[in-house]
Length: 405
Ligand SMILES: [Fe+2]
Image 1 (tube, rainbow, N blue to C red):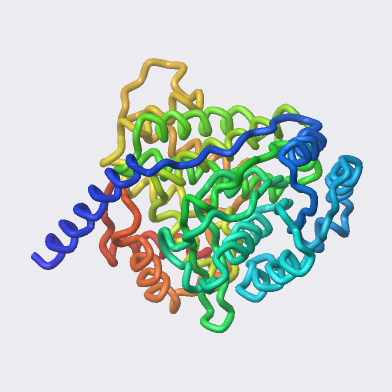
Image 2: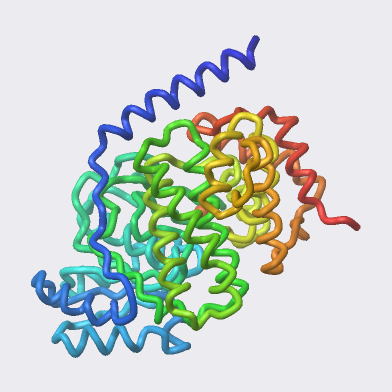
């Protein structure tokens, strides 16, 4: 009885969320796609009249020289660069405040984020703090608490996976409280996203694999969730189509710029889907294990995705069959049930072919109750999952990630 009441509450919440999201005017970033995108970005910024740019990135990217092309292009366009390369792998509140101080003292008038999800998320919140001076980073946690528009934000993702270049979200760490939290607001959507395969060509295969599987997880969770619409379904199917056709090639031959461009487009499409239709249990479990053990986000998603799909398959058979068709797995005439199984098997094969394990070596049996409680607290009622999981079902799934002794 108690469980039925809870489920009723979750589903009422999801219904409200579904209609609310339909009403929201999600901004869409302007896309600059293909080799040479960075040069076109510099022209775009100059035409918009911005002159002093805070470039937000991390030291590792500066050290390997990946930023050189961007800095040269901006300087050749007559723009002044103020470099902030202190972003940590999990950007903290202190990181944001450092960047904000630099932006204000150097009188910048725009922000360029260059890197993976961390610099992009950090840049979003630096922008939010610049224009919302009386709101703390923690005070913006949750939904719609960034009241004023942020300065113009230009994004150059160097991985194809997070989709942060098109989403309303930014994840920030609070080391004092040992937690990560998300800030979600329409104001955080960047103005321009540059999908330039040349900055992704050197990404190591293991990172190509795990970030690509993060994008796949975004597409799948947005698609099988219950608040998607025609737009999000189309974007998710397109992402799955592109990932199936390009991730193995990008993994094996990173210099293939066409495969890199298509993976960047897949990540963008998946981001467009999940920022509107949200995510599910795979992310909830990945966040719990990422918080406890530091398991990289994409890797955790890749390992967890097939097991969560096994759990909810009966409720989403037709949807998984559609994704199987998008992935090119339906050459023969087989029914939806068989196609849904085939899609899940394909995800497992994709993991295996890219050296992604089926278990999580850091996982300790004693931590399972904590992981279950954190994941379900995150997922309920926020995530519009197709099938609601009980704690014991969740425990059974997590137990499956223990590596054999
Ligand atoms: Fe993700």
